[in-house]
Length: 213
Figure 1 (cartoon, rainbow, N blue to C red):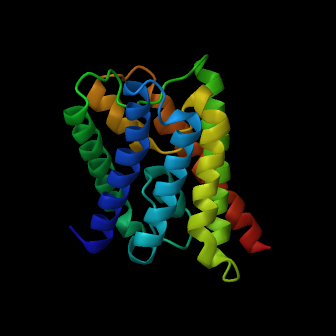
Figure 2: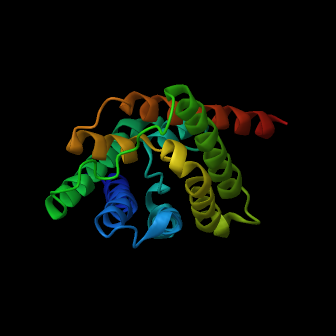
């Protein structure tokens, strides 16, 4: 495994272990972490992993982000499959560890729609679009580049805060695939694979439009 792939593996493991772990621990402790705490955990771990591995792999830690970057000139497409495999393996290992630690938990923090599938589908497209917009524009602007981790982490926190109760605010296929597979909650998984990819790719087209101007 290359250094880039290993960075994506560790970063995605950390994201899923800490983020979905916060959900699991909140459930088993009757709300000790809280909804705000869960959102803050996701935002904080994303920020930390960007600063830890951003200089090595870009710290995508998200297949939708990697796919979207492949539509720009800022990512070598030869790394696409390796990144996605590493991200999925890291996420699956994290969910596997959480299953071992919390055998009694039913879904391990899997994302599930609160109401209709189309409500969640549209939300996940928009949420991921905004996330990818922040990633692309902030990381490419030298005047604010050093704040990329904070900006992206804050976006994750914000979106998890208000949309989490409705869609789960996944914005990340790996984050949803892993707990769904390990817990067996697969019925709505397709939403959390397709919608974030659509949102992220739309953001890459937006970035290309502004860059061309």
